[in-house]
Image 1 (cartoon, rainbow, N blue to C red):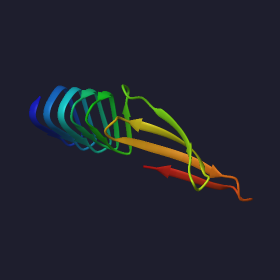
Image 2 (tube, rainbow, N blue to C red; image 1 turned 60 degrees about the vertical axis):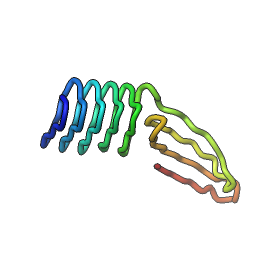
Image 3 (cartoon, helix red, strand yellow; image 1 turned 180 degrees about the vertical axis):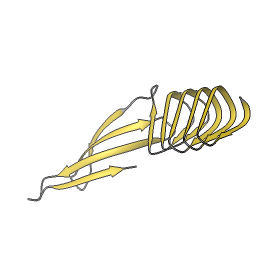
Length: 121
């Protein structure tokens, strides 16, 4: 598919070079351009942007913008850190090198009351 493709519910294409949009879901093997969908977007190789609630790709070298982004080539990274507030934090990072999501949980047990934190960014 070259150009612009739109659908109310689902788009499916082998190769996309251009813009593809759907109300619910987009699926493609290779994407060079922009794909936008309301809920789910899946692809094998992307050199463009994915915009959806859930974005998945075998390899995404562009931007993944959504609530949950996963690129198999970049994996899920586990982070562990502390800061000047003495919170001990644990995080899971998904996405790619250009744009990623971070889900965190932390605690601060040093003042007699244990404080907890949850975060997403």
